Image (cartoon, rainbow, N blue to C red):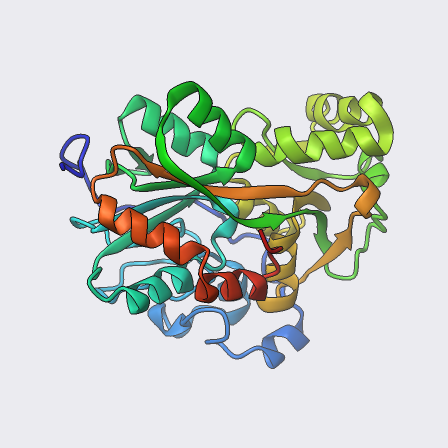
Length: 341
C-alpha cells in the first residue's frame, strides 16, 4: 500500500525555534560538573565549543537513531520530534508527544526485537495536531519541511482513541500500554514556593499551561484536576483570567515548551505529566523540580495505541502492537516513570 498521501515536499530546514537567550544562568555550576556531556544525548553531534549549559537544556535530549551528515544547530536548526528515517519507512508511529524522552530507545529496542524492520520513524507531537493531520491527509509541516507519511499506529489518551474508534472506526485493534498522572514542574529549588494546584491562582505566578484546543492533557486531565481541587472558579482563574492578563502562557508544543520556558525563567510553573517532570529533574538533571499533586486531586490517564485499519504495513503494525505490551517496552516505560497499564 502506498505510504504517502502525496510525494513529500521535503526541504530539510529549521524547526521549533527555541531561543537560547537567558539560558546562560539556567544551569548551575554543579550540574555542569556532575553531568557528563554524553549523559543525555551525544553532544559530539554539535560544535565542540558550543556552551555545555546550553546543550543541556536544548532539545532533542536524546541520541539520534540513525547516523548522517550533521546539520543540527542547537536552538536554531533542530527537528526534535521526528525520530528516525522518513525515507520509505517500514513503520510509522504517531506518538502522543509526552513520550519524547523514551521513543528513540523504544524504536531501537523494537528493531532489535524485529530485525527485519530497518527503517522506522516516530513522531512525538500533540495528538490533537496529529489527528488533524490524519483527517486532512495533508501531512505535517515543520518550518520548511513537509512530511506526508500515513501512520501505521496512532497513540493517544484512551478517551481520544476510543472516541475516534466509535465515531470514525479508524482502528483494527487498540491496546492500553501505559498510564500517567499529573505533576507541577517548577524551577530548581522552587523559588516561587508553589505548593499545589491552588498556588496556580496566584496573580503574580507566570504559568505555562497546555492549550485545551489540541492537548488532551488539558481537556481530560488538568481541567478535571483543577475542578476537583478548587472548583470551576480555579479553572476560570487559570485558563481564562490569567490567559487574558498574560500570566498564563498557552503552549503550542506543550511537552517541549514548558521545560524550556521554565529554564529560561519565562514561566515559574506548569502542569505536566509526571513523567515529563521526572525526566527533566531526575534523568536529564535539568534545573527543574517536581511538585507532586495529591492523589485526591490528581487524574490518572491511560495511553492507548490504535492500529490503523489502513496501515500501509499491517504486519509491522501488528508486530509493534505486540511489542508495546511486551516485557522490553514495559520495562522501558517503568524506567521513565510511567505507570503499568
